[in-house]
Length: 404
Image 1 (cartoon, one colour):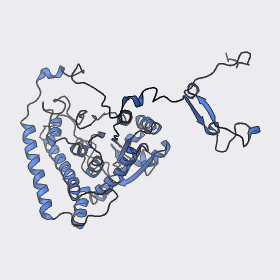
Image 2 (cartoon, helix red, strand yellow):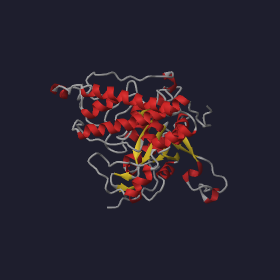
Image 3 (tube, helix red, strand yellow):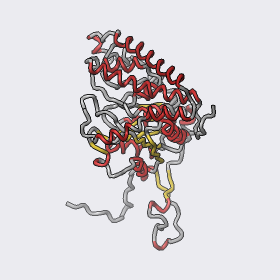
Image 4 (cartoon, helix red, strand yellow):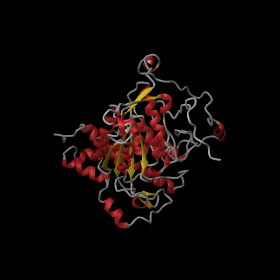
């Protein structure tokens, strides 16, 4: 078998891995819907059906040392990062063995020690400055890591999104932001929310690179995001990836999505990411019917075992509610240095607090003064002035009058 040529090659095992995680995400999603209808899901339930290629394809580009912060439709990313279906099942069922000990009934959980997963934040956009900070911290410690988070099309209009992207750009943070353009911000279509066809255009305002990818093509998602991750790891600054996909269910289980035109669902159903990938694998002879059946049986077997474990797990004891509200020595936070600390301490880390400013910040080709045309020199600005400091007027100099 000859695998197709790719800029970032994937082995046969990796290609089948992508299918396994996408199919596992879909089956787990449908299992959670059944549990919700049986009144076994405690909180809200947010479907990722139709978006599996985006979640799995992007998360699969990360290395073990990298950090990610998922959102409500990134169950696939959690599975790729090493969480088991039982973790997600027990979380939604609020069982004591869940990652939050039964204290949260949705997807607000993570793992800072082993999997490097930051818990989701309900306030849209807030994960972007957080993950920018994680990226900056990792760089300071010499860890050569990349951070990633996701944001929906509606979330790109929040202040936190723009503030975070600006911070990431100014600091050249090794950070990748994936915009899941699933066409609907709850019931508002993208065209009614922003006058852009490609949300990736928003990256231009911050002078950073961006990509647009077919979010229902898992191989394309992987290849594009892998390039973004490698650019960030090389120190070329943050990257924004817009993945065009479709939310095939309502915002949550209570939402019937009657505002979506039926023909729009038909259009995207014909482009289902799992069905497309099955065709891709078959046409390139990566698998056969036997291999496909083996993967399906594996998922069926695993989910059955995981569901039995979750349903047989107890609910938390009442007294647990008061525990762990605040961190009182529950864990130790330590910096993991992967370079000599002397590199970021004086005198090795010391630099002269002055910068050159071409043309004094004026238009290209402008001179400092008309009489100095052709003789302009870069201006040197003190650290104090660059940070908004001011100098006192010289003694005897005219002072501006204050208005009363």
